[in-house]
Length: 493
Image (cartoon, rainbow, N blue to C red; front, side, top):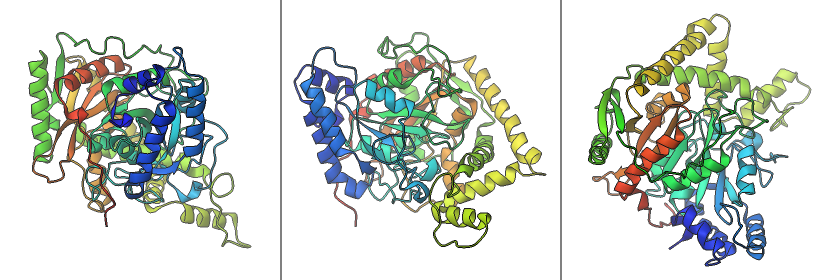
């Protein structure tokens, strides 16, 4: 079997025991990328030479004391800084930008022996739910290439699902790890806010952003989180909490488990097969001894409105630096005009439509006369949503629901921005409240000829990732959805 469809733990052990060479593992991934990426467009840039060189060095130094991720090919979302290759954020504004430093998460992966195999495509500046907003073309879902892989980390999700790498990193501001994980049939973990350093992540919404892993199994997600989590002196928002080994006790089921199912999550507007998968998951947990508790989260429907005030407001501030002078593309057509003309021309050339839309929206809600009506009010509702989650977790160990209201939708299907935004209705509130959440495979659409994955979302209180992963692992051990992967398909005409 292709090593990318084995767990990281299995592949790392095989390399450590000299059952396989790291170079062969990397070459397998490069061959898979060469065969499938022209149609999927999961990778924006492949770092083949550096990856092979690192693998050869690793093989020469192989021994029992090799680090945990030695020889494991991992992809990095293109809004996370790496000294290798470019960090473009899926934008023409940064298409030639090479970072002079690695992000903290990349440094920690490299220290653990991981091999960075490439940078994955994403919605421009992580703004999108379908990876259709990248300046470098759309990414296609490996289960059905006429459909989206989700977003904004769709390239990372598609790469792992298709077996192009063993794991990948993404960023999650309102669901950008969990939603593509659900649509591509893999595991995607959004850690608690502050659990993982954001140093080197190009900021979208600074109070919402988190970096997290995509993997084939819950165990691999636990391993990756153990490596990338922890306080960082370069990120003042990173929490000082100690980092446990999330693999310890992972296979131990939680006794007297109480799982809350918000009544708002079994919504008639969901795809019927999504609701069927949720009901089936409830039955699975019940068979494992869990008690199901009905929970009321009436502010669920307000999450999208709150998110699309706070996130664009923060984006309008964070992206102000990209003006064609301090950072990014400079328009060449502006001569003997004002500085404002240069700013306008550079940003109009460099930013795509969705980014421009959110910058304008954010600037509007922060402007004089509208700050209190929109931004300040959104902050107050954010606090209420956090309180609502705290109250729910006082009566249960975790919340259970769908990750997205539908399986992967067709490319070009959701051209209306509001229809696209509503796809994140079940994911945004975890970012708003700062909690941890995970999406795991929970079924497939049975009526669709293309056999589309359906994801299940679990949520736990902030910094309770160990509990979250154990609960997710209970479901994974009781089902086989995680072990399925898409067949290799050629290009779509």
